[in-house]
Image (cartoon, rainbow, N blue to C red; front, side, top):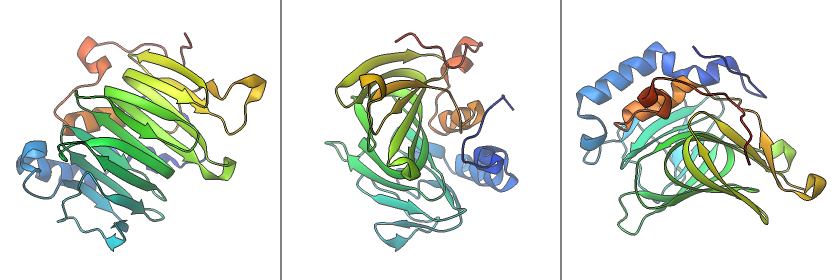
Length: 234
């Protein structure tokens, strides 16, 4: 397990990929054909606890669509794939998906509360939209979290890939091979709403697991080396 820091979350929340129940579920899902076969059957890899889709209770047999709204309850998590991307929704999260023109991919992930770890396959530019920050992404791995107790302050880590990050009138193009994080501020300290942040509340193993579910590898798996977290060059 790589070193990681937590802020307001428990250790077990970032260790889900090591749970025996998840490993069994992921193995069964892969045996059944993985992400490609999931287009014709359920794309839910693992569901723990209670979650709803469009207000209805989610079951492991359901197919999550690119136009759905997902809500997870306390102690509940959801891992699923959609098209060439994979997502892990943490507990107490509210997420809505916008479909692409074809309806087969997600064009935008709107995160209202909670947190999502995601790996996106190559394709047209897509977005993650949060209360105080928007990220335009291509193929990349991303961690996003909204802090409702801080007025919707939004956090995004470009774990690897290319991300165009916007907060208010502030924007930057982040190119990362190993975790570059940002705050989208509610107010504007020192006149800026987009500020650098530390990498926290997610792990390398989470990204590696989701990349595997999407038939990919992370940047550090491809290069065989890891960089320095929290390198600010913007």
